[in-house]
Length: 177
Image (cartoon, rainbow, N blue to C red; front, side):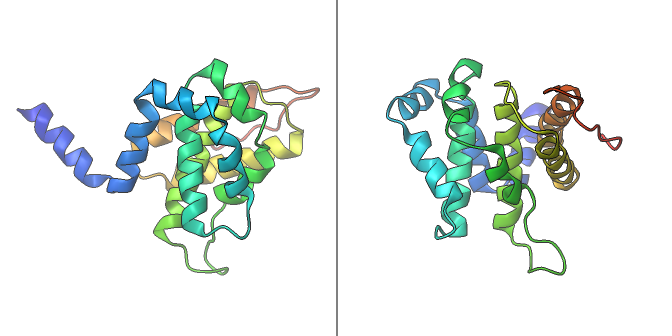
């Protein structure tokens, strides 16, 4: 059928590691809850923050944290308690021209970091206006560089959330999105 062909083409266009992580993020709620119960998110945040960790380990930690953050709004608070959004800023801004060559890992990291940030924003994260502005810029870049419409739509939700958040003053608004 046409639908089956469309799905098959869509799956072919996604790298297998991205597909696995996206499926994991959307499926099997009991696994995500078990990971939260054993505090896996704490260890993953440590790996994400570690400058000694390999780029691949940081990518895997970010993808796993994104998946765990998909457990639902009530459960995201446990993750929010462990991660500071400013720790994610470098992941939203991978190397660009002039610094070092950008790799597929950089692109994947940016995507998972952006999706993770969007989920964290649903937990009413408090932040300073300058942090919100940095996140807006990072999410804007991730939005523009995302290869999939669905990822861009999700990232756009985060951009809109940041635009309306108020933490003692208006968060600067991005006119681009």
